[in-house]
Image (cartoon, rainbow, N blue to C red; front, side, top):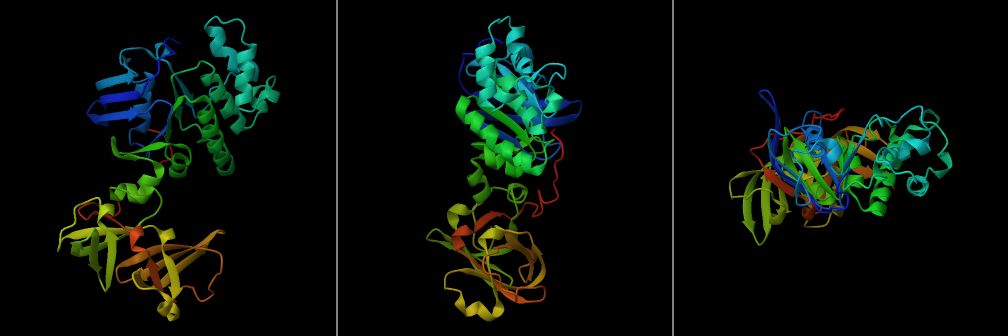
Length: 384
C-alpha cells in the first residue's frame, strides 16, 4: 500500500468500459465524497461492479480518469492504489487463524509488531474472542466481518465492497447491514458498496447511485430517491410505486391538477420531474404505504382536500406488519395499497368496494413518455 495518508474524494471523470462492441459502462462523471458510505445500486448487468472494478484497478477503463483525491491513479495497478476490496466470497485463508488472516496485510508489508493493530481491528468487528479460530469455525456473518477487518487494517483510503452480504440469509444480512454502517461510522473511511438489494443500499448508504444500462439513472440520499424519483425506473426499482396516466388540467400557485378517468388529483409542482403543461400527459405516482383505504360505506369520513379514488379489492395478502391490497380502479387495474395491521376492517376483502385517499403532498409526477413499467420486472441476483 502506498500513499495511504492521502485524503480526498473518489472522482470518476468520463469513465467508461467497452467489451468489444458491448458498452458495459457509458461515460459517466461521479464523485464519492471522502468519508461517506456510497452505494452503487442496480440489477444484474447494469455496470455497477464494472465501475467498482475500475476504481480498484481490476479493470482498465476504455475512456476516462480515476482520481483518488487529486491523484490520477488510472494507470496504477491494484496493489499500488490505496484501496482494498471485500468480495462476496470473503476469500479468507482457511489454514490461518482469524488473527493471522487479519494480520496478513501487515506482515506482507514487513511490519513485525502487529499485535496491537490486529487486536484493535478484531475489537472493532467484535471478534476479539475468536482470534484463534479458523474461518470454517465461524458463521457467514462472522467471516464477512473478518474480511472487512483484514481490509481495514491496511488503512486504505477507500474500501470497496462487492456484494459482500449476498451469501447471507435475510436475518443475518440485516444484522450485517447495521454492523457495516457502524464500522464505517467509527473508522471514517470512504466505503463504496455494490449491491442489487434496494433495502440494503437505503439502510447503509449516505448516497446511492441507481444504475441502469451502464448509466447512473439518479443519484442522491436514499430518502430523496425514494420520495422524489426522477424516472419510472427509479420509482419502480426502489420499492413499489402506483403510476397513473393522467392529463394536466391546470398548473398554478405551485399546484398541478390532473384528471385520470373519473378522478381529479392534485400534486405539488415541485414534485414533478417534468414540466407539466395544460393539456399534456403526465404520470402521477404515489407509494402504496402513503394511501389510506376505507370501505365504500365510510367514504363520508374522508376530509376535503385529499386525493381520492374508488375501486374494488381484487386480492389481499397478510404479511404480519401490514396487509397488502390490490385494487381494480377506473384509473388503473392494479393499484397497490399497504395498510398497517392496527385496527383491521374485516369488510376489506376481495370483492369489496373501497375508497383510496391520500395527502396530495405525497404525490409525485413523471414524464409520461417513459415506459411506465421500467424497473418493475428487474431482478438482480448477481453483481455486474
